[in-house]
Length: 139
Image (cartoon, rainbow, N blue to C red; front, side, top):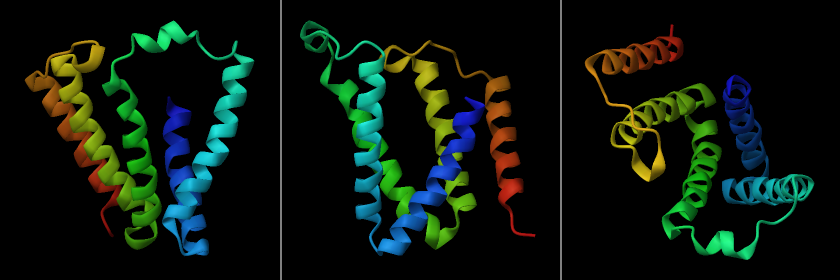
C-alpha cells in the first residue's frame, strides 16, 4: 500500500501533464482509462479469466459506483493539478480520504470491517491531517 501511495501523486503528475500538453483534461482521463483497460484485461486473463456470469448476478448495483468515483478522481486531479499544484491537490485528496475512511469504517458501510470512531482515532486523524498540512504549507 505504501507503493500505491507513491503511485498516486506520480499518476496525478503524469496525467495532469498529459492533460496540459493536450489542452484537454478529459482526453487525458480517457487515455488513462484506455491504457488501464488494456492492463486490467491482461491481468484478469492472466489471473484466470472472466468470473462466471452467476457471480455478477449477486452484486448490488451500488458496488459498480466505484467506477464513477475513480473517474471523478482522475478527472479532478488531472484538471486541478496544474492549477493548484499536485501537492496541494493530493493534500485535499488525503484529507477527504481520512475523513471518508473513518466514517466508512465507523458504520461498517458496504461490508467494510467496522471500527468505531473513538477520541483516540479522531486525534490520530487530526494529527495526520495536520502533518499533511504542515508538509504542504508554503514556507
